[in-house]
Image (cartoon, rainbow, N blue to C red; front, side, top):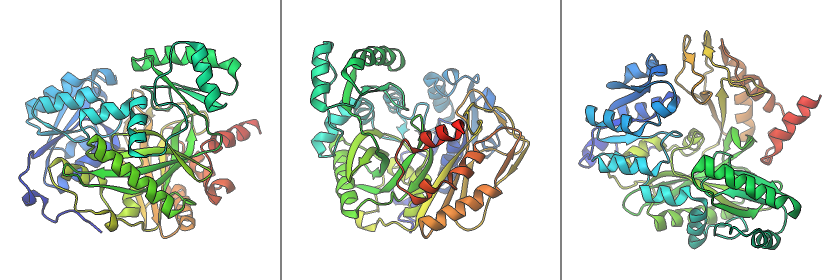
Length: 464
């Protein structure tokens, strides 16, 4: 069911009529399509490496903002802001990655008189600092991983006392970390000092702050996400659970929803706590609360203050266009979706199709010489590539997202097997062979695998 107004352009006075999409690839195209359906003009920025991309031809305006390296283009705040001003764009959609969780960029957009399509800078800062985020979650009653809600002291004896109080194994984390970086597991006190020193220096270099924190390390958790959607009028809802446990080095490979085996009352309790947390920090737009789930308990780990790569899984099972809703919230409209309106229809699975070796995971830049996409009922492909497209070595290797939807998980797995067998990409190596093997893995098919399963499975295969 579409809960959006049928004529959004007349429902409220628009604060903007054009959107600059500060991103590239499939997410840039996804946002562009949502804008066009709402009658919004689109401005696409691109690097020199992307200037021949097909999706740019569908925009009202395309602006090259710099050379291929991200630091000179998609991470170049002054260049993007200049493009916004020169084209008259009234809003900026950051997509995911790049500047999507950069509070300073969000502030700069607003100070330039445009709308940042995402949460305010204050919420981004709070949730981007893992210590501040944990404090906010604990205040809202969101269950958190055991450990203090403060930065580690400098004194190693004090740190050892904190670790002993939590109980080994523990995990040392960078307060400003993310993307699987800035963390080390410590199983014994003799390894604690080295882990702290190395992680502190890594945090200083990678994230600009040496602050660390300490938490209990869970041995066999699943990675569960809760999607939220909030407006500027106090409206907030949670929109289902996703299971993202199939990971390699903390990078997701397969995502699905709903997360199976979690009692509805437990999910509802945690979902409602997430909504309350959003209200307390003044959150707007879409966001995702990420949890570890073990032995029937949820443990908050972080919040992504942006659209997720795996948002189509929730769209397929809820019937809610999350990107459209982002735009409507930014246009000032209140949510027309109440918590009681949200249901879950069937099961959805997403495979991230990357241009990389399927087992070494080394990126595979080059030209796609042939592309055959799957189709049929319940099959969706989000991609910006076509035959003749050059995969650049400068950016993430994601080239497509293959999503299926079916009445049950079992049927979704069968549908994904069929879709993967139909999909063909020549000219570059892809991880399609890996996905095909994953969907034959008995443990994955049974469901409920933990976050370590894929790495163990890959290690066993390489040892054979």
